[in-house]
Amino acid sequence: MAKTSARDRMSNEINAGSMADIAFLLLIFFLVTTTIVEDKGITVKLPPWSEEEPDITRLKERNVFSVLVNAQDQLLVRGEIMAVDRLREQAKIFIANPYNRPDMAERPTKAIISLKNDRGTSYNAYLEVYNELKAAYNELWDEMSQRQYGIPYSEDMPFAYRKAIRDEIPFVLSEAEPTAFGEE
Amino acid sequence: MSKFSKKRGKASPAISTASLPDIIFMLLFFFMVVTVLRDAELKVKVTTPYATELTKLEEKSLVNYLYIGRPLQKFQALYGTKPRLQLGDKFATIADIPLFLEKHKIKVPESRHGQITSSLRVDGEVTMGIVQDVKTQLRKSGQLKVNYSAKKRPTKGRR
Image (cartoon, rainbow over all chains, first blue to last red; front, side, top):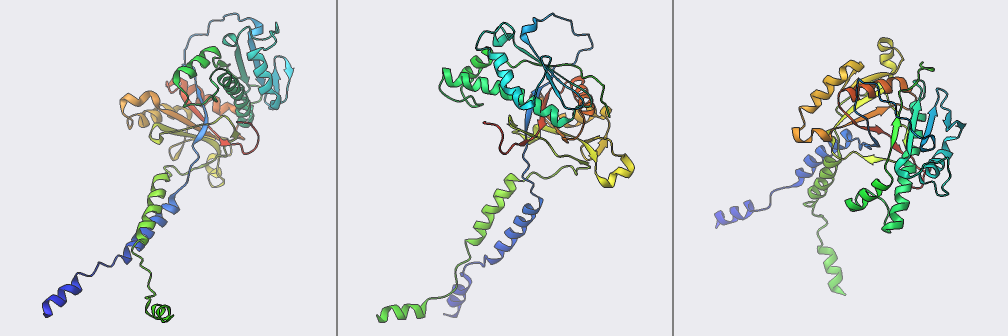
């Protein structure tokens, strides 16, 4: 009789109260060490290094969209001073050339954007310009995708669609060796 | 009527806390998953610029970080105020980049070497000179996939 009553008492559930404390400790540790890092950025593919001098191929002037950024972060686009917020729109017009103007790219596949900066250009300005040029292409891709497939251009659309668009409007941005007028 | 009053008298006030650990564990796992343990202490000031055309870096193990910025106040006596490169947790020069890349490479399976991305975390105020030198060195080392780290611009931009 006494034995059974003792066993009854033993079979009570284990006190799980301290489990919460342990979990709390771990939780607080991770809370403190966490930095939810925003690991985002503009991905670029650099051209491979070669010791040889690049062979000079004459490009037709109409196919080149030259962007120069000087040490004062000012912009010279095709020989004209331009504000950075007009760059995207101008680049789009140049690449797509909707009115078949004789001074703009023959075809999007032939368009070349040439970016040149100075060693004294601030990184802020450089990245903003790069961002605008990339945005111009992104918007063109998006417009084409909407027109042809009725869906927005994104990384997870079918690969064949993406390739078709990228073949039609390839991203060509060539960066020249920077000048060194304004090195600090 | 009497039924209700009786019940109130009997009800035990203790709430079971047995499920509390489960809730805490759920929170714990959430934080464990999103946590990235800071591997390097920043010795240079890095405030990345804003941009709109961002791509996300997916796998952390395939990314190496290069920091460029002015040394923090406490290091300025020793390292000056000119923008410097930081690799891992110490100041470095351009010439240290190839070794740094190799050290990261051996931790990555060989089949995935082509997917390694270099994340350039560059302060917005820095001039392009040092960035250009780093880029040139990366090209010479065959590390062509580069990500210019930037923050999402809150308002401007349609996309």
